[in-house]
Length: 347
Image 1 (cartoon, rainbow, N blue to C red):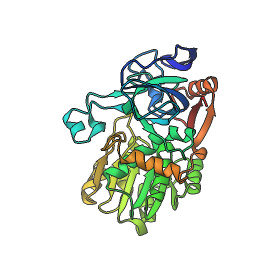
Image 2: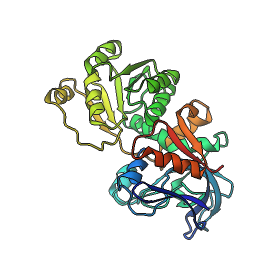
Image 3: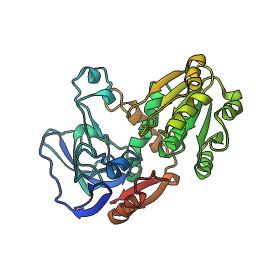
Image 4: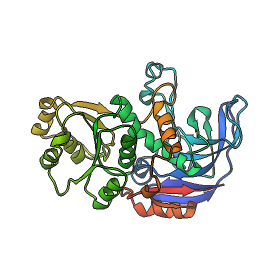
C-alpha cells in the first residue's frame, strides 16, 4: 500500500508499505478514502514534534471498514467511518467523569500510533465513528476539525442567542463560524489579518468581518457596541497577539474560549490582563473535542450538520490530490501554516 511517511524533520516520502492486519479482537482495518493535514501536524513534520520516526501521520480521515477483529459486532465491511483519533483509557478519574480530553494515559492515532495518511490503517473500534449514509465519504475527513469548535461551544453551554466572535479565520475558525450560524447564534463576526480569509468568512455567513491589521482592538470593540452583550469569543489562531486581542475586544461578562494552541510564550500587558477582571470575563480553555457518552455530542452534531448539507467545505480546501501531490504540497510548506486545507485522496 502507499503511505506518506515522515522520516525526519522535513523529510516527507511516499513509500510502499505492507497492508497492516487486525490483531486484537477490537481492531478494525480501514481502507482510507480521504485524509486531511492538521495544523498540529506541521510541527510534527518540521519541528521535531513527532513522538517517533519514521511515522505515518493523519488523524483527520474517513474511509470504509475492510475487516474487523473477532470481538466487533456493530461494524461490518463496507461501513463508512471517520476517525476519532483520541483513545482514552476510559478508567481514570477524568474518564469516569467523561473528561476524556483530560485523560493522562491516552493514545492518539496519527501521533502516538500510525495514522491515516496511508491506503490502509488499523485502529481500535473506539477510534471510529460511523458516518450517516447521507454524508459523502470525503466530507467525513472534516468531522474531527468540525468538532474542535463544537467542543468550545459545548463548554460554553451552547452558542444559541449569543453574539459569536471568531478570532482567526483559518479552517477551524471558518468551520466554527458556520456551525455557530446553524446552531442559533444571534450574530457571527470574524476577525483576521488576511483579506481573502475575511472575504471567505463573509461568503460563509459572517454578519461582520474586521481586519485586525488595519484596526486596533479598541476600534473593533467600538464597532461591536451593538453586540457587546451575550458574547462568546473563540480564539482559534493560537498566537499571543490574538489571545490579547480576544481579551481586548470582549464585551462585559463575555465568554472567551481559547481554542488555538500557542507555540510562543504569552505575555499580557497589565492593562490587558486587567480587562479580564474589570469586564468580569469567563475564560474557557478548550482542549480537543470529546464529551460523554463517547465520543460526545460534538460528533453527533457535526455528523448531523454534514448530513443536512449545512456546512460548505469545498471553499476551505487549498489542495486535494493523490499521495505524491499531497507529499509535495506538505513539503512545500517548509513549516509555514497552511493557507487552506491540504487533503490526501485515495478514493
